[in-house]
Every structure is written in C-alpha cells, then in structure tokens.
Image (cartoon, rainbow, N blue to C red; front, top):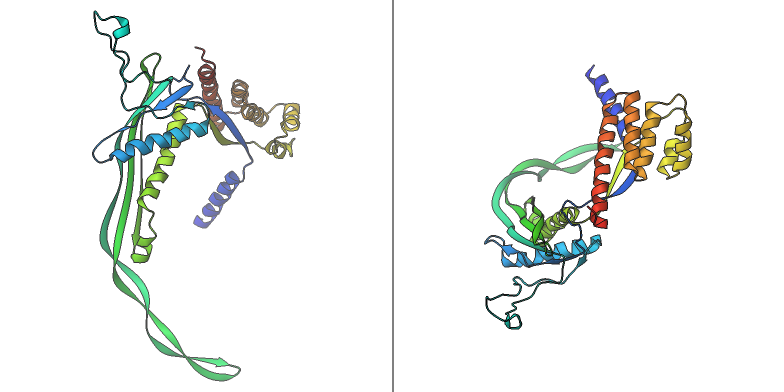
Length: 334
C-alpha cells in the first residue's frame, strides 16, 4: 500500500512539473515615491565600528552601478559627504550671504548607514572518519582455467583529527532616499543578508571563497533588492496553462507566442468552460492587459470554483493596481 501511494505521489509531481507554462514579463512599479525624480545622487554611507569606512564607499558605488544598469534614472557623480544651502544672516545684504558647499544638481539623494560589512572565520578541529589502506590480503582467482593469486589492499575506516573552518559573511545597511525639491524622504529600506561556508581538511579549506568574493556575492543580491524598490524594473515569471480537449495544439501555439491562433480556438469552444476562460485570462496577462485577465479569471471561477483560479485573479488584480502606480511614477501624474 505504501509503495502504491509513493507511485501516485510521484505521478502527481511529474504531472505538475510537466504542466505547460508560458513565460511572461512585466514592468513593476518602484516601492518608493519616485514621481518627478529623474536624476539621483549618492553620498558615501556612514559606517559603524564593525563595518569599516571602506564599506561606506563600496556599497553606494555598487548600488549606483545597479541603478545605471536598470536605466530608468540618470545617476550623478558622487555627492560630497556634507553640504549646506546658502546661510542667511539676519540684517546682511543678500550679496554678502555666505554659501557653503552648494545644493547638488539632482532630484533625489540616497543616504545610508552600514551596520555590518564583515567576514568572520572560526577555526577549530573536527573528528573525521576516512577509509585508508591497512595492509593487504591474498586473493585467489581463476584465469583461463588456471588458479592464480594476487594481493588486494585491505581498507579500514579510521578517525582523523582535521582542521575545521567556518566562514560567515554579513552585510547590513539601511538607506534613506530624500527628494531634494520637496525636502522629504520618499523611501527607506534596510537590506541585510549573510552567507556561510565551511570546510574540513587543509585542501578543502584552501578552496573556500575569499572574503571579498563572499561579500561581493551578498552585495550583488542586495543591490538587486535595492533597485527593485528604488526604480521600475522588469519581472519575469511563468504561468500554467490549462488543457483544453477541443484545442489540443493551442498550448503549444501559446508557448511559441502564436497567441492569435490559440485564442481563436479557446474563444470558439462551446459551451464555454472554466479552462478556456482561464487560458484566455493567461493570454491577457501575458500581453499586459491585467484588467481583462482579472475579468477572465473571475469568469473561470464562476464556472468552476478552483483555488487556482482565485489565486490567478488575485495576482491579476494586484498587477492592475501596480500598473496604475507605475504610470503615475513614469508620467509624473497623481
């Protein structure tokens, strides 16, 4: 009975894994209020004791590169660590007012504080069981009808005390993005991640990632997270298609991007089914019309009450709201 259940579970998992899907991409809105912001500048970040001043330059430099690759903003050269606007002294003629530094020529400034940028290594020893050769034994065998002997190594398991290293890398920083025109914060975030590697034995220890490599790997991931909050960005995902008996080739056509032929078949099915309505919703979602996708998924729910359809409708509704937010950010409209 247990074996039968195992086979059934495997078949179900295989069916899910093999379900036809289409690849979809969309542009998502920034989390921050970037309306009217086109040019961004970074300051060197403040650092705490366990981060080091070097991190205050490396992190904003990497975030800058991430924004440049995203392409939505124009990124200025590094802004000085401190600046002041014109200092007005009561009773002084305007021409004699003191100007210190000067206001940067950007729409928004990114400030930050680094709490941690470090790699910690802990060295110890560990008992490791390894197979070693301990002598040999005589083995008899027959070759072409003739009995022969040969020496065969005898292997035994033995405990060894080996050096052991655990390396942990940690980056933890926060950002505050300020709109320079309106003098207000338009977004704040904290970005934290860590990575751990361990090795036993001198040869494996020698192959551990370098400190800089571990920190760079973490920072690249955190940069992607920052850019996705700071700027409009492309999101890629897949959507499952339903099988429609009357349109056997429609899913393959959809996967090739031949939506017109697939859609024509789905729309021609009578009476309409939940599967056809759902697949029509997938078409609208794949082509960026999330409102129509939501309506089609709702129709599928009306015909058949599946949790899967409810999840698709919720996703399309959320993306509809996000598109409106994105349009507001890009066009500068309220």
